[in-house]
Amino acid sequence: MDIARLDGVLYVGMAVRGSPRAPARDLAVLRALRRYLAPLAVDQLGRNREQMALRASWSLTPREWEVARLAAQGLSNRRIADHLFVGVDTVKKHVSRVLDEAGRTNRAQLAARWREWERFR
Figure 1 (tube, rainbow, N blue to C red):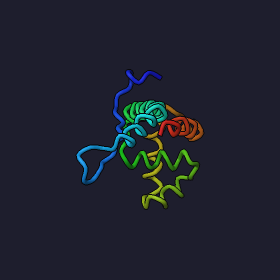
Figure 2 (cartoon, rainbow, N blue to C red):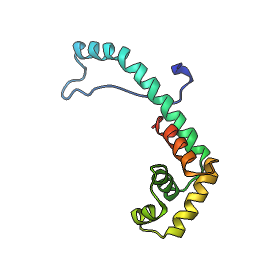
Figure 3 (tube, rainbow, N blue to C red):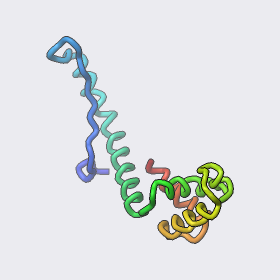
């Protein structure tokens, strides 16, 4: 993945109390770490971009996100309702909306899509 194509910034630095400059040895360590941290930063920025794209493509309320997560974990409507302190009919409406928004027809498909999305978290 090309870092130039990613949006975002990851900064690794340090603060030295009581000194206007960082010791040369500490700067050398940070420069050496850069070679190892850069690929991790590129990977994380890519995952973040994928996650943001998915969130943008699924126009869900915060409660619908909660219901989607619990439904994808395999909880029944009754267990979701008990967990969120809402009625079963409310959960049914949220699940229907989530399935519609995700372009899925059942919970198994939702769970598969959710696992795919979880990879990018």
